[in-house]
Amino acid sequence: MSQQVEQVSKWIYGGLWGVMTGWFRVPAQPPALPSSASESIESFKPAIGFLKYMKFQFWVWLFLIDLTILIVELIIFANEPGVGLALLVPAVFVAIAPDIVVYLAMHLRYDTTWYVLSDRSLRIRRGIWIIHETTITFENIQNVTVRQGPLQRWFGIADVSIETAGGGGQQQQGQGNPWQSSHCGLIEGVADANRIRDLIMSRLGESQSAGLGDEDEASRSKSWSTEQVATLREIRDLIAAT
Image (cartoon, rainbow, N blue to C red; front, top):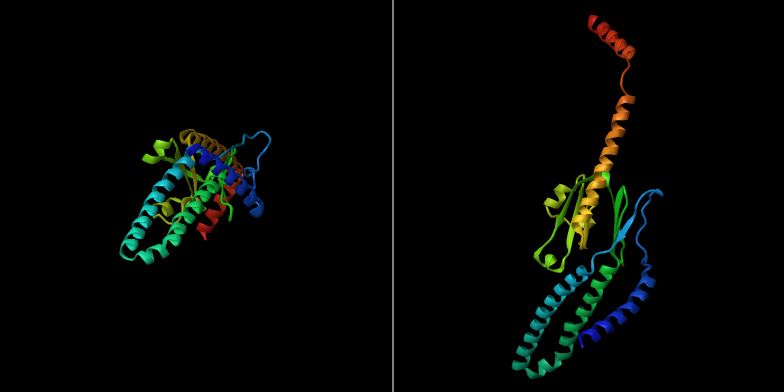
């Protein structure tokens, strides 16, 4: 029975997803990153375990909320049968309608989330009503960490948190969502979080090495010649003598 319900839900959602993507013009393809022909581009979505993780939390909260509504309805019916009957239909609607909306929202969140990695930057896309795209260049990254709670561990997923310049203080103070900040990025619900972290760190090291090489070359180009140093010393001595 549960498999039939799941198949029907997929069929309904498939039709709804097609309608909503047409209405809101949600891009079906992952976001593009500017890159050269020699660069490697990797596009991926959260793992299927992330959707199961959200569904599990959904069913737990659904059970608690619907149980509360049922208990309240039974109490009202026991004390005022007429009022209880009058509130039966609204109670059923309140118990079911939000559940459908949240269930669809979870699938929409999963289907509209994309992560794209190039050799120089990372782009994160979320949203269907309002599409948020965050681009982080590896040169600006200061810290990359993997976060995994007990429930995430059960579903085999983890989050990769990325901090850029100026983002540490905001995250420590707990201000706002990490994926809505211009200084933070969150790759959530992936099954290979350690690989992604190591990949970002390796490309971060390559970017920093390239940056140091450019800085050394620039400093060499700006170095003073012997004649210029001698001229400056003469000017200094003349100023000191006067």
